Image 1 (cartoon, rainbow, N blue to C red):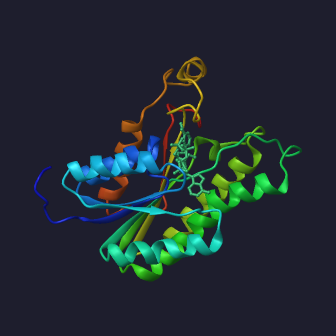
Image 2: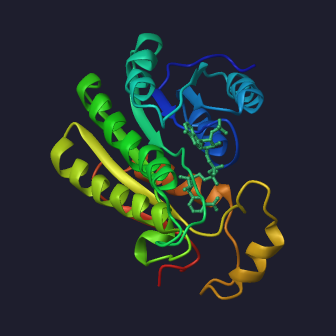
Length: 242
Ligand SMILES: NC(=O)c1ccc[n+]([C@@H]2O[C@H](COP(=O)([O-])OP(=O)(O)OC[C@H]3O[C@@H](n4cnc5c(N)ncnc54)[C@H](OP(=O)(O)O)[C@@H]3O)[C@@H](O)[C@H]2O)c1
């Protein structure tokens, strides 16, 4: 354990227990933020990530919440602020990603995607702006916002709506709050998927390779550290959006 220095603030990372969310939470801790680590089902991974963050000398507290449940979701920011009154960063990372064409998307699949990927970031943004005098929001989008993916209709549309929210919120919430987005491409296969398949598909990208969580983290830290950028969306996708 390293000695605690004064934190830069506190960051709420949704879906922060594992994978990309955990990498961002660790990087934010490394750069000086205390971490409010949100999770739903991955309790063990959340405990592990929290221990790693505390090893870095930062405070970390876990917040379990189903973002598909409106009353639970609206409690999240107030609960975080009770423990971290210095909350000044919100990373909307938690997401649902399921296949479904337009014809194959029923109401449940549609609502799950829009509730978790769009409605939760919308109301978390509202609550963050109400409670925090100053701060920053980063929305984790997807390179698919630049095109249409007919096999992930609800997912793609929910992320496109989140991109629009990013720009709308940046206009409305400045100068106190900056709002930006990062659009990943081929970083990690879906849970249970294999990296080989991503590597094979990445041959078709301008940069002919997959990315990694460090590439995403670098974009998030750039946006947090640059006080003249708001409403921006950085593609970290090897050129896939082109
Ligand atoms: N993986 C990629 O290469 C890639 C590519 C493009 C975009 N992205 C975007 O990058 C972000 C992170 O990607 P990822 O692959 O690491 O995501 P992921 O593993 O698919 O999901 C992240 C977390 O979302 C949480 N979550 C799902 N439903 C929830 C709900 N109802 N309530 C609360 N939390 C819920 C889960 O938390 P628990 O595990 O605790 O349940 C999960 O660990 C996402 O926004 C994704 O759309 C990723």
